[in-house]
Length: 232
Image (cartoon, rainbow, N blue to C red; front, side, top):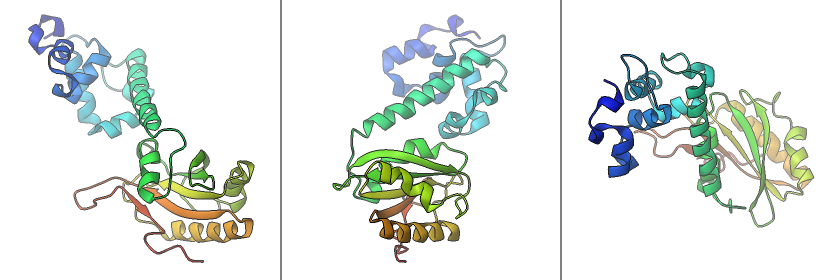
């Protein structure tokens, strides 16, 4: 049944106005963005199909314009609308972190980078450049791909730190698998960079790996410093 043929109390837009956005299912909220469906499948049905295919909002937010268009009823314009909506949500989360946040704990680091990292489907290595008060100067992206000593050279890591006159850095990368447990390569790269930082008088404060929470895993990140790997 077309949405406009349903009682007003059952249409997503009217329900949002009457009851608030939290009263709507994921499929209904997506339907509002899609606006229309196709013959035999209204916008709510297509929204439900998207959720069924991707399994979660996190997975859906990772989808490209091309991937979204594999669902019947999702053309280029609707796919672009969805990508734009998820990107705005991520940018809003970035802004909520505030200007020049204090990054003196692993939790503060994870809160800063969580949203932009948990949606990535490849590993991305970043460094947070900090001033003497442990406040963020900026985030520098170093490399994509599995972390190893070939991809993460101290020269590439410390070049932006020197340019920004950073007093310290925090290493950050994500594990797309969701398990933030450090690999042997993660540990080796960390120790190599600690030694390089000592020579340059730029302290490596921590290496935080972002993953995802599970029923068995209370936190979605680990700190290599807290795990005891910060010795050379």
